[in-house]
Image (cartoon, rainbow over all chains, first blue to last red; front, side, top):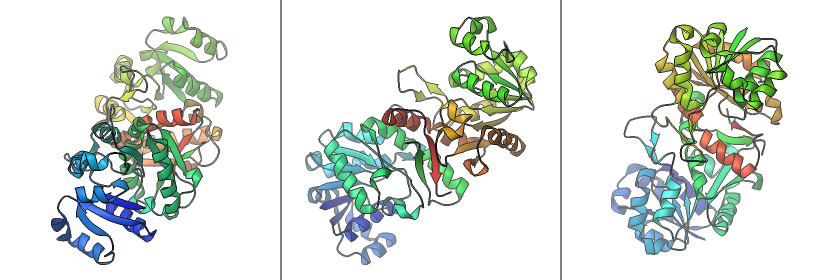
Length: 220
Length: 220
């Protein structure tokens, strides 16, 4: 499969590395490849993975059969707009982003919240995309290596397209998620619930002093 | 211990019944006892528990050494104001309410959300109260009988007063919560995280088709 990961932060790089190591063809999309390459964190990461090309957002969206939104949640719609609505149409978008608003400091709040979610906003803005919200409720190292956290724990799915969700299930299996750990919440509206776990996640990180934890729903 | 449970809905009645069955002296506080007694659901419940007196909010706050806020989250501050700031001073308030706003239909949204929480709002409005937010993240039958959900799962604590939190731990033990299932998130600000689990709880209820589930944090 050809994946295009949009976003060059730690989440995007972690997902791109995992996809590449599974044998997929991976490109990473960014607004300004030159500026990204000038960043020490990205240059170091890239030196170890020369096969993962860094390209502009539109070229990435063109290249990928499946897209991963790992941009910052507050700029996701702008990044997808730059990628091009025509390029997006018909493709599956795995949306792992959270609409965290750091403008008032730490911990961030959520925007949108309550009557909306980033997952819905993206689906509404790009009706031709097949958005699946998933993996946004945990540290990125756990996304691609669930065994970091011992015992059973969950990854959630929200989206309107059953085939798209099934293709994401296959990917999650390949990351090491067993069938019983994948909990389908329903349509994209349920992304509100998954995104609103983030304020709790942030406070659990504070209370526990680490990020190697995950939500498990007991009683499923 | 003498408990005053504020609120006559299913949550308040479930907690009051559990407290009474543990041998505590329990009163239930309501705005208008006559109106509450005229309700079939309350009258039926009361017939089986004549020892649990129903009184006005101020009399309840006077009688209780420890108070339980089981009122609707949108009216909690009004109910506590009616109970009387002087009556509340120095007492522990176990806040199990959620600020669910049903004005736009189901599922409800949260108000306040993001930069505030009901737990903080109550603590700010009544600085003499020792507020402990807990038990708000599950169905009320699980609050008083955690064994309804098999396996390990969590109940969270948020509050500023360590002694108050310790007294709530003792109560939770008596309901059947083992020590390792009680997760102290920190100060009352962390109630934002616990209250923002509710949108996910509502969507899990929809996906699972029942309410006998609870959050477990794997990796603590």
